[in-house]
Amino acid sequence: MSKEINERKNVGVSQEAVDQMITTRLLDDAKVRFIKTEGGFLSLETEEKKYARVKVLRLFPFTDPNRYISVRDHNDKDREIGVIEDLAAMSEETQKLIREQLDLYYFTPVITKIFSIKDEYGYAYFHVMTDAGECKFAINMGANAVARLSDTRLLITDLDENRFEVRDVSKLTVKEQRRLDLFM
Image (tube, rainbow, N blue to C red):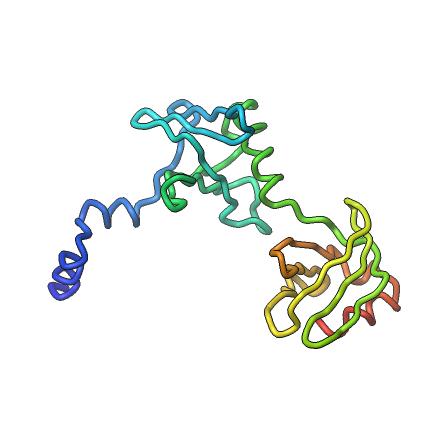
């Protein structure tokens, strides 16, 4: 243990800084205020400090999307400021502001039809219809671009890190399902 403390001292990290890094701070609606900036970003005022721009992330985006929302300081390497335990416990205005930001960050079109998937030179080229319109994108076949979220649900991340979802593979036609066999 003393070796760890000495190593920490050598890199200039205080015990207080370490404690802050490992402590989760729950944000209380009565003690914080979220504000939409003129540029459309989100800022935060706490009792201790004002943050010009914050980022909100779901800690459990698929299993519990409205609970445990991490609030991070965009201007300080995304350092976590605190966690909103339950979005429903916040004021309606705060919920609206946070949901807007989450919807932007987690924009994930749902694939409803697969026109084609072509495999060439280690890449797969998709031509699909989504709930946001027709789309073409490519994925790296060697990467973990297709994640299986359940037996029937897929999350596909393209080369530009855009996400697409297939909510239920079994609801696609047999021909479309065969096109996805390569990834199942």
